[in-house]
Image 1 (tube, helix red, strand yellow):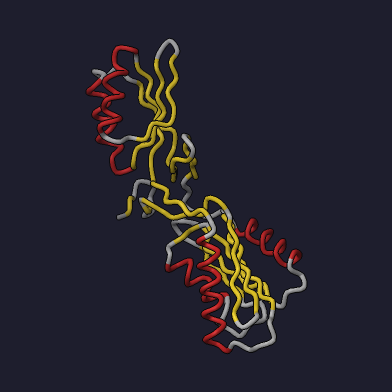
Image 2 (cartoon, helix red, strand yellow):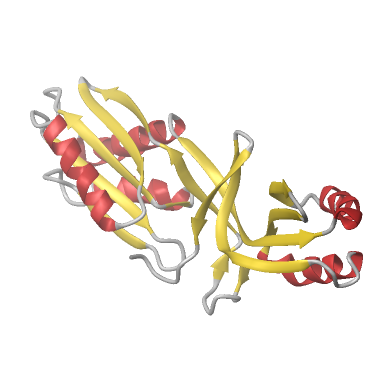
Amino acid sequence: MGNRSLGVIMKEEVKLVYKAGCDEIVEKKSRFIAHVFPVSNEEEAAIYIEQMKKEYWDARHNCYAYRIGIEQPVLRSSDDGEPSGTAGKPILEVLLGQDIYNVLVVVTRYFGGTLLGTGGLIRAYTDSTKAGLLKSSIVTQRLGQKLQITTNYNDIGKLQYYFSSEAIDVSHTSYEELVTVTLFVPVAKVQSVTKKLTELTAGQAVIKEMGTYYYFASDGSYVTIPVKDKVE
């Protein structure tokens, strides 16, 4: 289900590439090497594509596809000399089928001397893309509002109990003259959480909205991607 809080339909969860990966398959002596990259715009994708063409300059084909942007994704693909529809499209269809965003896949082919035919090429580019994705780190990120809560020491215990019981993602807590808690709340729950925090602190807590993000936990911290209405 989506959310319209930013004037566009927002996906509440998205799958994104967190860490790049690479794998290869061999089909009738032809090598298909798939590189997967996380990308945030087309300029970044172009840099990676050029990098792969330089690194594998002696390969017959460097085919690719990407899906960039979350609300209005940009879709591009290239067969790079392979028969039309046998390389770039199968790569893109894997990305769409697995519903992964902000991703570029470049598949390099070293010809092995045996023609694979249309069906064989589609299968090889599909399988190599899937193999590359399996060797990458794909994470599901949630759409959330980042909130900063400032309260006194008398109320922090109640808030911490509430955060724990509601499985609210707490990013950081700072103990100084007052206690400041930074947390992420699913967009659909922001109103109810804000109301509850106000009740628990008798209206004394200062609640500041810090922006809307896609986020996930990694190694004890939170990785975030700011939400924007369009791809830059």
